[in-house]
Image (cartoon, rainbow, N blue to C red; front, side):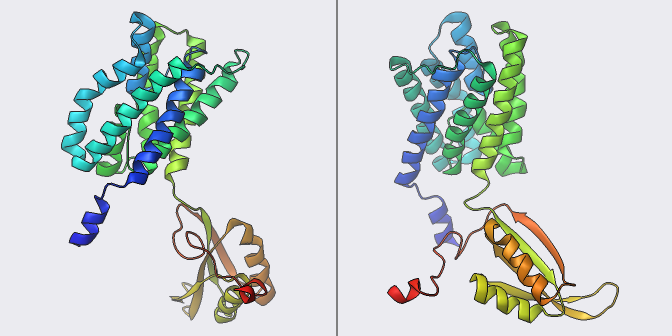
Length: 298
């Protein structure tokens, strides 16, 4: 148990690389999409944009100053490792905000607010989601969202959307209602991208197959699809008969193959299919066993 805890708290160089990439992407979207198209932002980042519009304060600097009390709050709630990661993420974001303002790369969006909103949400959410996927934040509302997820299991995307909406209302001091509504669209896409990035390394399909030919179906799935299966004992609620239930997880592209396979063996089989949020293990996070001709080439 002690060893597992130590590994979980281990600081990995790869995480910092992902923080740098994510912060660069997030900051690029802010500087080259949000600001030129008068789109606001949520959370502390949105506050920095308000300060920029009203007082001309560079977001690269206000990001650091506004995050100091939240970093202290994050330290008390998340501990030493999270503080290091958050501090690094915050500094990275501030650095890239400064860099991209020195190296402008304005896009030819022709002032199309819908495209700008979608692009800002996609790029910003992908960048911040990448940071969070590897255990970091960029400070601000990221800390609040992460604390709520770890303490009370509220999804980060939902927390971000609520906090963003609050700051967006305050942003009416420098943008009009039209730009605020487009910013709401960007915030929604932003939240969905973070949730998408956080979902897991692989989404697959799980099958529960109720059949009197469960063993035959299980063997066929193993031989024809090279997927593992499990057999569960079950009692029929109506018939009170004992039977086996086949459980297997396959790639989305293999769903129709499983359906046809089961149909050929037992047309009366009862099947339920569900999408798995995260799938780890051989065949998904590891390379599948090679079969047939290619296995002989090894």
